[in-house]
View 1 (cartoon, rainbow, N blue to C red):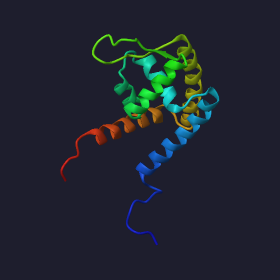
View 2: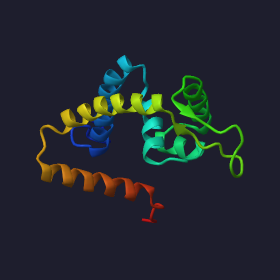
View 3: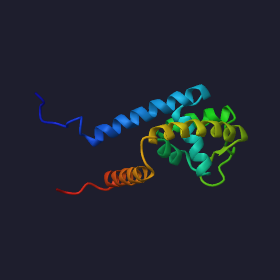
Length: 150
């Protein structure tokens, strides 16, 4: 007999968590042979799409702490994937940019990650994909709004 609580078979939140976990596992599987983690890949992708992001912005975009992002950026810089100026052009921010090695590595990783997304969406029509995107954006927006009094 089930106690009052969330029915895991019909809980959208639980299913979203399960989907996120499955997506993460599939992404790790294709990135691992490339010597990358999801955070490593996310950082390179963010820098390619939004050059000049600060450490804090990168951390938010990759869903990690600023400290973790700083350690990752130092490693990526040491390994030649990103470059940062020795002196901040303004304030204290040292904006990272992709090096040619970083761009090449990102291109390979992006193809691998794209294959995971194609596999994930393979059972959906274009219309279902559009509807899912709209629904997920709505959920994120609703959860980021200030809670309403009931």
